[in-house]
Amino acid sequence: MAHPCPPGEKAMPAAVIGNMLGAAAIQSFDGSDNEIYAEEDDHNLIPKFQLESLSLSSRAQGARAFPKFLSHQFNLQSLDLSNNQIKGEFPSWLIENNTYLESLDLVNCSLSGPFLLPRSSHVNLSFLSISMNDFQGQIPVEIGAYLPRLEFLRMSDNGFDGSIPSSLGSMSSLRLLDLSNNNLTGSISSSLGSMSSLQLLDLSNNSLTGRILSNNSLQGHIPGWIGNMSSLEFLDLSGNNLSGPLPPRFDASPNLRYVYLSRNKLQGPIAMEFHDSSGILALDLSRNNLSGRIPEWIAGLSNLRFLLLSHNNLEGEIPIQLCRMEQLTLIDLSHNSLSGNILSWTISTHPFLYQNTYDYQQSFEFTMKTVTLLYRGSTLRYFTGIDFSCNNFTGEIPPEIGNLSKIKVLNLSHNSLIGPIPPTFSRLKEIESLDLSYNKLEGEIPPQLTGLYFLAAFSVAHNNLSGKTPARVAQLKRAATRITLFFVDNRYPKLVVRICHHHQRQLQ
Image (cartoon, rainbow, N blue to C red; front, side, top):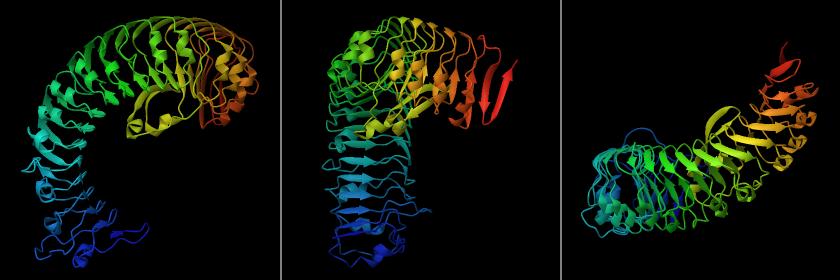
């Protein structure tokens, strides 16, 4: 018999639980997003009901203690007290009293003190979230033995210190482990490689030393045992001091979907590390010291949506196979030493469909409208872009690029491209940022480009363009509140450098 709180109904009185203590038939109660709680100090409030499910997730202000009636509950399977300012330590007694408890959510409850394990290992808990509290001290060494059935463990945003317990490696059912934003130190045991069910591992923003994960100032090689995690879907090793070659065994992770290895010191060629992982959606190897050519096997990642290889030492031509990857929506090859002609590309016009929570956790740095920003989550669903800037590309711009009608960003600047600006660029109806600067382009700006009404940043500076500025260029001001145009160092008699609202400035 459930008693949910209907949407839009006025918050119930604070003592509502106390008023229901005689209702023996109640098994489930959901009072989320209200200010519902039980009296804290009356030990005579012994309920007649035995709940199986209770949710008192709240946004209420003011500290309070754990509801006393919970000490008389022994059949709980699911308990959510998140976003309450509860006083006290971790309630291990809740797990001990309720041996059927499977889910415990204590996120953002202002709990403090050490994390206390239950006295028995015979517990059924599969979901435990205690993030965003004030827990201190070490994570208990025996956590893997006392909570063996956990599938989801979130302990982020606390004050835990010490090392990561090796007993976590014995949690064969664990699918998500989030220990980010703590004060953890020491190295990471290779026993974590035994977590064959793990799908997401986040150890970011700690003070770890050794070989794994993002924003930890880690040094050394990427450990090969990561490839043993056959269920791993989301791997973030970004923002460390990892060096050496890429690991040899990512082909052992058939479920791998997201690979973030950016902002490290990885060296050597992009070898065959991912050739059996056709399910990869995102591959970010940017800002390393990788060298050699872009391998053809990347084209075998048939579901790849995001490819970022910028700021490396890659050279040679782009494999033609990459240009035919129909699922790609974001390609960044900027700041390398790539050469040859820019080929015509195929780019996906279909929005990225999110299939699980990991899809929302991805993020990428990308330069748009001359500003490098971090794009994440749902923003990337419709985002499409190509950045080939700061390379050694030559030849003419292929007119087929004008067929990329859904592209938002196109940056071909700082190369040695020649010939005219293709009139087919008038088909880029959704483009917001177009940068062709610092090339050797010739001829006039096609007047058809004035129909690009979403264009907010347009640069053809430092080319050999000539002729008249298109008479209708001022119509570009419809595109956005502020539109920046760069025409400097060409052969125009008057150089329009910026249009802002209805204001046009000219240089004589």
